[in-house]
Length: 293
Ligand code: 0GY
Image 1 (cartoon, protein in one colour):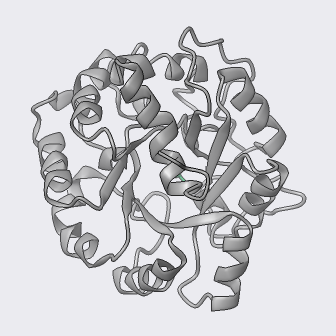
Image 2 (cartoon, helix red, strand yellow):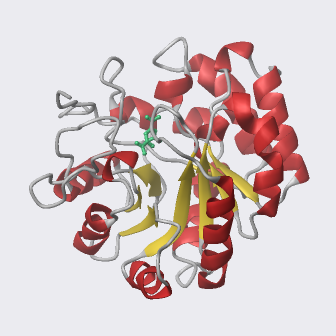
């Protein structure tokens, strides 16, 4: 497998200034491979995307904090994610991917290291197995820690996933809105089914991220904005946003992170919506002890 590089080295400076304390709530770190080798089961082999690079990007884009999500290429070894959190000096927390056999002591160690959630990945191109029964065991075990569950799936399996989602006892965050087909438009079947899920399950939140993955038109992502702005307006207290740097698997459509940040005032057009999306909601989930809202 040849190494993939999926980010631009010098992203543009966004015109939009995120509010003070803004959290980029969906990023990854890769490696450094010499210290933190990739999983033998990894479906892609990226170049190193280190914590130092992540923090430089955070500062360049005008963000204050990050949520580092364990990427599938590191399997269930969260050492690279924990290293990124440690190096952030309190400015990052994380979401882990764990083995169903994980011990309570190891869960406690992850909590100590800044992990506040677990991710269940259902994308066949990223993982070999997505065992719902084992995921539910994990969800029940992390609930007492005050963690939440992050779920990544595509729109075609939403209906079959509903009983599984309903059995999860914690807050659930859906990555990239469950990847709706944006070309269907704001009233399309995929996003309508997703809105129904949010309407009927108040514990389900979503990341309104992924413009670069979901847009058919490309920058400045007008098709994405048309579908996603109504989501932010309808569920202002249950949305998160992240750049998704270093954009795994996007080698053929590498986004400019500055351009992605400039989508924010279009999907969250008021200062209040921006503050909820970028500060209050992620703080409530990842730094609840600091959140006084
Ligand atoms: C994302 C999306 C992707 C990859 C991963 O864990 C991962 O490898 O999440 C993807 O390829 O769609 O959100 O980072």
